[in-house]
Length: 94
Image (cartoon, rainbow, N blue to C red):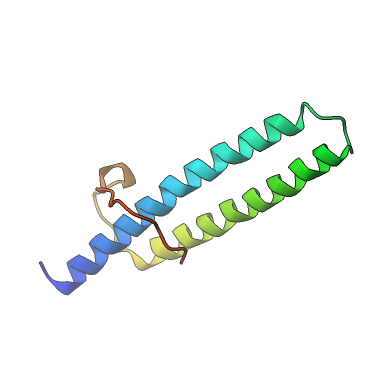
């Protein structure tokens, strides 16, 4: 396999990893928002949930932006994110 193909496969794995993190973070955001709905509006706990939601939303934005950047680096292909094998271990933000 050529270096170019290796680079493309690595970009695909990185994109898949970011996609997995995106889905996890959006689920977390939904959980935080659901918990905040149980609190009295403007209470200290409500405000804490709002801060947490803002932080998670910021993480979602950063992941989405990284996906966009990787997508711009990647050649068009007939492979979907679901087709990309996942590697074990921590991921690094781009």
